[in-house]
Amino acid sequence: MKFSLIAALVVVLAIAHGTESMSVVKREAPAELEKITQYFEGLLETLKSADAPELANKAKAYFEESKAKLQPMVEKLQEQLKPLSGNLEEQIKPIADSVQAQLAPYASLVQSQVEDVLKFVVDQTKAILPAPSQ
Image (tube, rainbow, N blue to C red; front, side, top):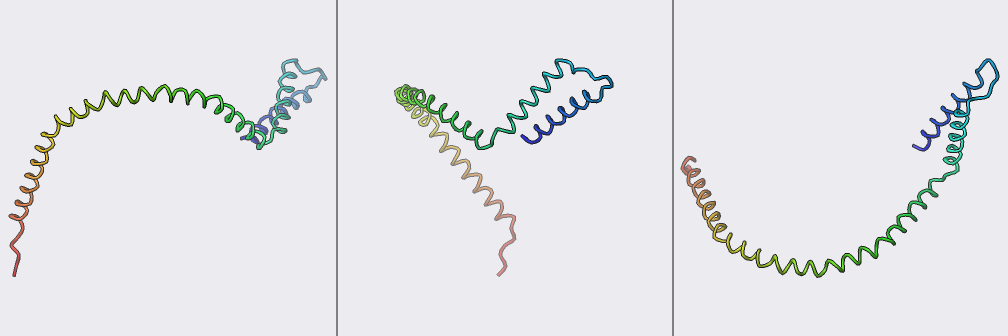
């Protein structure tokens, strides 16, 4: 990506330079074109001088610095949430026990109905199959 950007900048510079040199009458380029050319030349030099390991080191340093800043906030938040989680557990446990007690009869009813359906399927399958030959 870095090389394609550099190539695009070189093309823009070549077009700008070619346009200026192709003019019949020797005159100075408009100020805007000169500013754009200088900007791209400076950007090109910056990209040429930028090293991939250098950029990686800068990014790593930035992330480490950000982590160092955020770590105390995370620890503080964890400390604040500990009592809340204990309180939540105390409130939810009775509700969960109540729901489980209410669903227990339905679970046994479903289990017995599934067993009845399986027994019916087995009986019907035995009735359809031919008798074993001896």
